[in-house]
Picture 1 (tube, one colour):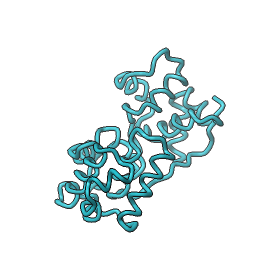
Picture 2: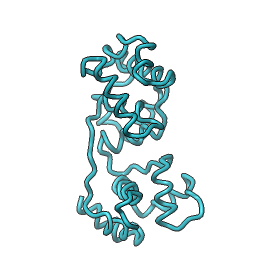
Picture 3: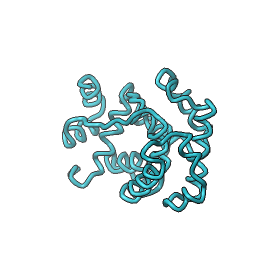
Length: 200
């Protein structure tokens, strides 16, 4: 990781200032499994506190074992009563069916390149490129992911680089060219730069 920090500090003076302000790189990873992806779906477009409560209810409803089989044993109405929207209920059930039927095999994902992981995951209803990017970063620990659809990253770039508007994906790719092959590390620092105690 030291090599990544040295590279980013040398390649971009704006990012160097953010790294100096935020401090050590402390990303927290999750297991690259079915439960992690279910959690990502639950957390879409919700505050962390509300999503955590709903996810806890879902986990409790299946006895703490979030497997495709246990999810599919729950009736959709029961899932909605736990706080899931109709859409998220459908998304989670679709993921469970894809996993049960072997169309998404989590054990295979670590050996696939990023674009193939995105292709596999986005065949599931409700899993778009953003969710796939989050899985690549936080579950598969890929070092060079730039989540161009993430509002937090877009806002952090707008703030750090004094832009009038959040950048579009093409602008982000151009700006991030010097960050390769460590876009994940740069993204983590950009997320942290938005925290109140970052003082940037």
